Each structure stands twice: as C-alpha cells, then as structure tokens.
Amino acid sequence: NAGVTQTPKFRVLKTGQSMTLLCAQDMNHEYMYWYRQDPGMGLRLIHYSVGEGTTAKGEVPDGYNVSRLKKQNFLLGLESAAPSQTSVYFCASSYLGQLYEQYFGPGTRLTVT
Amino acid sequence: KQEVTQIPAALSVPEGENLVLNCSFTDSAIYNLQWFRQDPGKGLTSLLLIQSSQREQTSGRLNASLDKSSGRSTLYIAASQPGDSATYLCAVTDAGGTSYGKLTFGQGTILTVHP
Image (cartoon, rainbow over all chains, first blue to last red; front, side):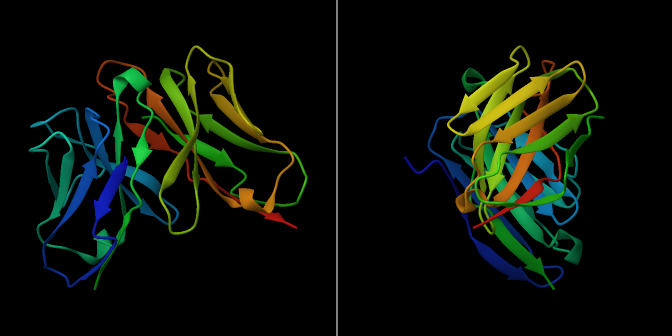
C-alpha cells in the first residue's frame, strides 16, 4: 500500500514551458487535492476533485489546469510556466468515511527560471 | 473567509520539556481540525484529527484540544525529544456540504528540540 505518490520529485522548467505533475493514490479515496507551499504563505489549495471526472477551483487556480480521468489519478498541468509558479506542490487525498482526514504525497519541487 | 494563525512561529526548547503549540481560526463553523507534522523536504504526516464535536484527541505523547466557540486549538507535546524537531501545521475543514474536506492551513510552528 503505497498511499499517495507524486511524479516527478524535482523539475526545472524555463519560462513558457509546459509540464504535468502526476498524483496517484491506492486507497480508493473519492476526494483529491493539489496544494502549493511557499515560504511565508503556507499551503494553499490550487484545485480539487470530488470524484472521477470532476474538478473544481481552489484558492489559487490561475495558471493551472487539472484532470481526473481515473479515480486513482489526479493530474496538475502548467501550460505556460512562470517564475511565480516556483513552489513545492503537494497532492493529497481523503475519504468522507474517514472524516476527510487527508493523506499527503511527498511533494514535487518545481523551479521555473 | 477562514483564516488560521499559529503562534509561535518558531520555538526552541531543551529535551524533556513539555510544550504547547497554539492555533486559532476565525470562523468557528468547522467540520474538523487536523494537526500535521512536516520534516524538512518531506510531505505532511497527519498527527491528530479532532471532529468539531470533540474536545480533545490523544496519541502517545501528543494531546490536541479544541475550543470551537473561541476558535482555538492547542497541541501539547509531553517530554519532548530531539526527534520531535519539525514544522507543525494546523489546518481546518469548514462545515457545510460543499467543503469537501478542503483544508485551510496556518503557517506552521518550527519546533527545535535540542539535546
């Protein structure tokens, strides 16, 4: 039981490049989330999903897109990376039956130059 | 909009001390409150989850209390050890059918326990 995994662990992009971050969970959780963590700002919600085929905006969605084609996977896309998107990205999942207790992945450290 | 504040921002204590970390939130209509631990360069590990109807939860040397009406929670760590050194994060899930477990985080308390 791997829990929540994220790919890749590190990435450096040039401004304007695109990339996709992959999150996978093997706990059969309905809800999945993408957060970013920045010094002095804490963790902030980017997008979330309440089930396969559904996505919704969080607090800081601009510049990101997401997809949840399979229940176990939640993808975060950056279409045209900007230096302001340099951050550590965390994926999490939860289940209402467990009172929404969230389980986090190890994070992806992204640098945009 | 819910806001979560943690005090102090950093804390350094000698090994063996009992300590208290504080968390406050502005909207008392919460579903639950979670305390997390984050080691440098790592993800978040859930320590304790308190439902809005509960007053406290305990796990080993950790005890978390919740006073929903005043918008406060404390994390008590007994007999601190160097291995407790980490950042401790408090986060709340708002009540309501559309919260879907979304978390609002505080900025964390950086704890250092020195031998």
